[in-house]
Amino acid sequence: MSRTFGAVDRHRRKTRSDKGSGKKRTNYNRIKRLGNKDSIKIWIAEIRPMNYEAYLRFHRNIRHKMKPEVYIPLRGSIQVPTNEINTKDKFVDFVVNVLLREGDFLVRSFSHGKNKYHVKPVKLCRILIKSNEYGLYGRMTADFRLFRYRWFYKG
Image 1 (cartoon, rainbow, N blue to C red):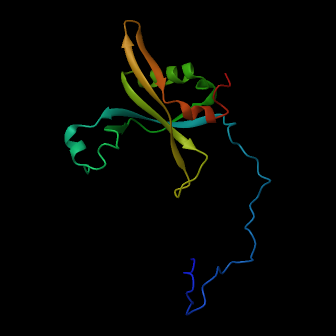
Image 2 (image 1 turned 120 degrees about the vertical axis):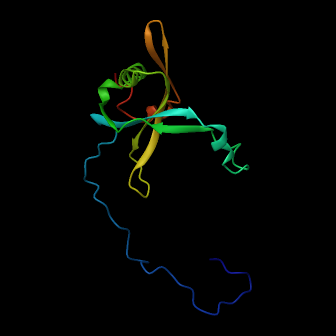
Image 3 (image 1 turned 135 degrees about the vertical axis):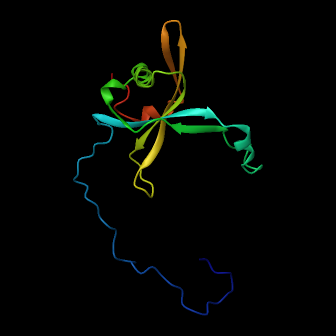
């Protein structure tokens, strides 16, 4: 902490106890598997609009900043081979075949980053599924995260 100009300390300031002990080393000889995965685990949640009573429970100063949406998880995780979802069309077809119903859905997965729970959940994309006379079809939106992965767009 900085000292005010002209001030005098009464006591000696504390310094770091591990000063000079050196940086902790990690094992850099390990094989990194970033992006070269054979399968990936995904979670799917349905996006529904929040009802007005629940919206009013939030403080009035943060209502205009939040999205009035609710994420409803559908089932457990799905282990998917990456060669089945390595393009936009394959990804959408896979989600349509798994869910077999209309709606707005959010696809989530884990990234390599770490938070305090040692995982980093991320949103992969948002898929809107509709039906016409030929059957169900989907459209992918908010897919900017997928370009970070090497397994995507290999096909």
